[in-house]
Length: 102
Image 1 (cartoon, rainbow, N blue to C red):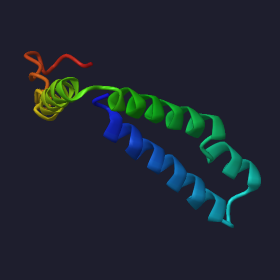
Image 2: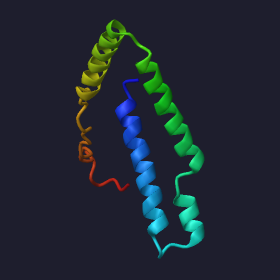
Image 3: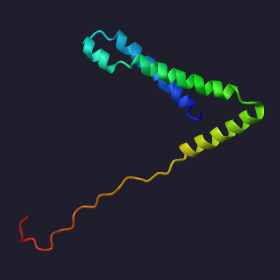
Image 4: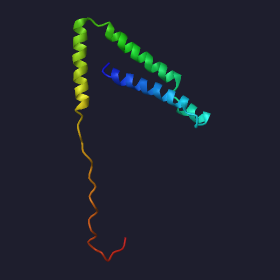
């Protein structure tokens, strides 16, 4: 349920891409068909969003407050991810015996 905004954004992207591809005249039909989001995928995402929203609507006020608090904690946790930094690759050490060929 904490992913609801992400799911809604994903659905909007699918619909936007479908419209953009349908309006593209330069692409071959096979290319459009391969790149086009499937109706089944769009339908499944819509169904999932509806199930989540229906589940939220069935909560009473106390449950809804607890739910909202838990979602806020999850989202804060996702935003504050652990930064691992970029790995460093050190240059190779010089060959102690330069007369030796590789």
